[in-house]
Length: 303
Image (cartoon, rainbow, N blue to C red; front, top):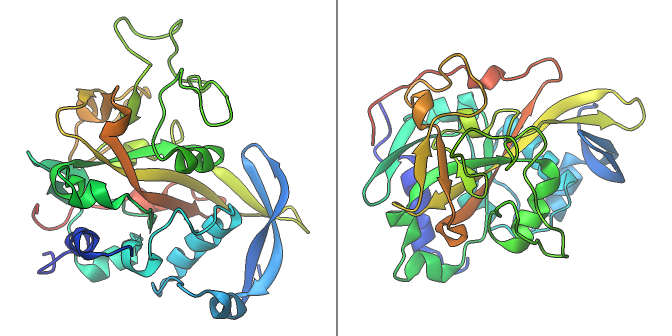
């Protein structure tokens, strides 16, 4: 059974009330040299020293969350994109999720729509414009929750733009965006399929697959040893009635999610403003463990 008020409800309540608001002991800092699918790191300050330097800090006492946080630090995104991290971030590892007693699935929006808690991931809250929360839209109350998997190298562009883009858009700096390699294009797609859309899913089990959230290998610079693999996604609000629902398009032969059938896993919209990212999700795995944290079962009743 879930607690009287789940973390998800506390998270959204706090949004409405906010004014603006390896060796043991080592952490890792990023080197400038990066290769596709690989991120090289070197030993840096101790975790204790790093925490002393941080003014806001993350107050979540979980080893898995701290590991995900270290990876976010490696990306050198800066603090300006994120909210007060202690209030808006959360660990969804199986241990933390179980201790909170939260359900695996919740509903949100008007009309309500179900979404899956991103179990096995850690969320870092993004700074959302106050008018979108407290204005006439009230997106945290009225919009649905979904997920968008992406490549590591796309994070900064998405944060700079403030929204997800559509193939054909011209990004900041003048780069024209195109469909990702291996995805449908105008010249290679099923009849009637429109590639010029934003694609999200109500479950991270789909949005977090390799087809969308491409993993990278994080290695130690002095030995080239693979420390772990990491992948990222965005948790978003999406406006009801702005999107269409389709079946999965990654060629899955088995059911991907225990609640959502494969024919409702992909949501698509042409409205850029109808999708608002509010959380950066990170998942890290041991080098030889692809998706150990995905093997979870639904508990409790729906909210």
